[in-house]
Amino acid sequence: MSKIVVIIPAYNEDENIVRLSKKILKYIPQALIYIIDDTKETTVEKFFKKNSKVKYILRKGKRGRGSAVLYGLKKSKKNKKCKIFIEMDADFSHNPSEIKKNLNFFKKNNLDLLISSRYLKESKIFNWSFSRRIFSFLANFLAKILLNIGVSDYTNGFRIYSRKSVELITKKCGNIGDGFIVLSEILLIIKIFNLKIDEVPSIFVNRKRGESSVNFKLIIQSFMGLIKLFFIKQKIK
Image (cartoon, rainbow, N blue to C red; front, side, top):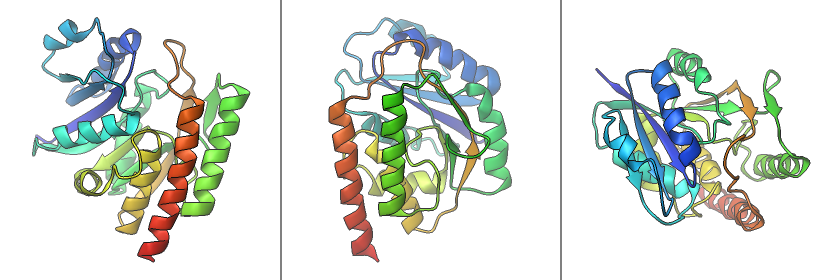
C-alpha cells in the first residue's frame, strides 16, 4: 500500500507537535509523519520514540522553515512506497480536519501541487494582527507581480505534493534561502516544469500556543528572495 507522508517543520513547538500528530493520525491513520525539529532542547523526543508512525528528527539549530521542509522531503522520499506528501505547520494554524477533503481533491484532479489558500472567496483568516495581514498581503501582491504563477496564495505552507513534484523540488530548490521564500521557490520550479497546480479554500487560524517565528529579518529575506526568483524566471524565459 502506498503511504502518505506529512512533513512538519518545527521550532519551539513542544506544546503542539504531540497533540498535532495524534490529530493527523486520527484523520489519516495510514500517514507517516516526519517532524523536523530545530529546537535546541526538547521534552517530546521520548514520546515519539514509542510511535512507529512518527519519524522525529532533531536538528538542534534554527536553520529555517524551508530548510526543514526540504530536509523532510529528502528523507521521506527514500521510502519508495511514499507517493503523496503533505506539508503543514506545527502550530495548528492549518486544521488537520481539512486534510481528508484536500486529499480527495488532489487525487481526483491528478495534481502535482495543491495549495490550501487563505485568499480564495470561501477562505477565512482568524486572529491575525493588522501587521501580519499587511505583511502577508504585500508578500503575495509582490509575488503575483514578479512571478505571475496564477495562484492566490504564494506563502501558505499547507500543501500537498505528488512524488513527481517532490523529486523535482529536492533537486532544484533550496538555492534562494531557507525560510518562507522556499514556498515561492517551489511554486516557481513546479510552474517552470509545467506540473499541475491548483488551490482549495482554507480556514487559517493564527496560533494560540507558542511564539511566531516571523520577524523583521525574515520579512526582509523573503522580499529579497522574491527579487532573486524574478531574475531566475527572466533567465529561463
